[in-house]
Image (cartoon, rainbow, N blue to C red; front, side):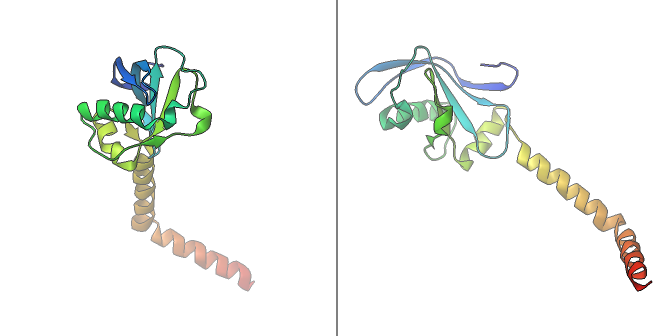
Amino acid sequence: MNSETDIQLSGPFSVTDAAGRKHDIKAIRIFDEGYGIIDVYVDFAAAIGKERLYEDKVLIGQILTRLRQIGYTGPDFGHGDLGLQDDKLIVLEAPEEFNPFAASKGWKNLAEEFAEDAGDDWADEAIGGQAASNSKLDALKNKFKA
């Protein structure tokens, strides 16, 4: 974990997979910034090998139960990009309903910040840029008349 860019949502706890095997989880975390869809990283204390725990509904259900214990109230997650899955890590993709919960923990939605900045630029052009736009259009018209 990179403590400068990660938000830890949960500390250590144990889960059991569908086959009845116990797994110790070190933490559930997210990155502090993102663009709308949040990947949720579940760090295991020991290697899980080639097991496809990101598909294990029993295990994922227990992770979701843990998240709900700390305040998440939305729908279930799916697994994240298969290329992100690792030997001691599973990555889950949170639905959009997760965003308010993540924001309450310090997550910043960069897409909203971008939309606000773009909206401000558009508003500036609409307020003060109309005359300049007309002048540019007139100049172009005159150029092509000549």
